[in-house]
Image (tube, rainbow, N blue to C red; front, top):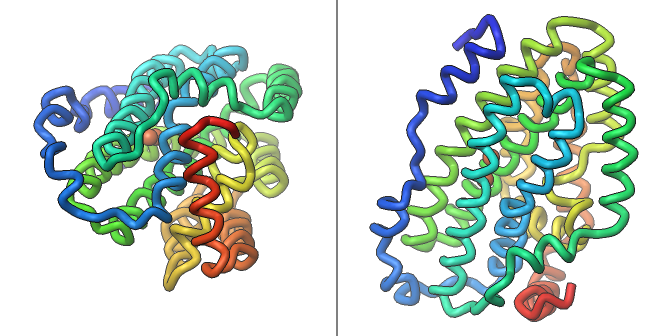
Length: 294
Ligand SMILES: [Fe+2]
Ligand SMILES: [Fe+2]
């Protein structure tokens, strides 16, 4: 689907129905969650996914301080996008509780409190830089967003296959459908923005090559990000899946031909974090996260 303006992309997005409605969530067979065992190694990954999702309101507030976030079309998208991502986090949390992993009542506040200091400093610098660059940075924001949405959807796909839990699969299918709509918005606006100038393309390429890390790393602890990536993608075909569905799609954006960054970064983490380390790290991360010491 080719769009001519950002407004066309927004109109398309606004026509998409939500999947994770209250009716959908209430209708899930929650009482059967415990009937199927869930490998404990996936718990830290689900906690990581949950936290990345609910931190979206922080990313949203940060973007509002930049030319990208002040763009009327993009800010309209972000209002709904922010709500959808928070639902994803809340549904994952409910699944964890139903599976027997209790989480603190104020887990959302705790997740916000646990954001690293480095992240806040880095964000302040990035916001200043983007204000200096003005709307030429919008293509970068959108390309980054597309990469994060695509890789998030692949992480959910991988979780669905590996965990093979019927209720979790229903939840993840719903989330994946909403992530696909987010991807389409970000990718399409990135394409339109990057087409406008070679300077915007050069900035996007440089920033992605220099700063790309898995979604959530930076705001959350690096070890949690790396554990999640390795648990999902270090097995057979994992890195190839990222290459095919994320890197190669990002390469189709103006100025990003030949990009290898996402594949090399994810591949590097999988290489470093051997499966033998995963079981030991899982036990530690489960106890640390559930008691919110991190
Ligand atoms: Fe999400
Ligand atoms: Fe998303």
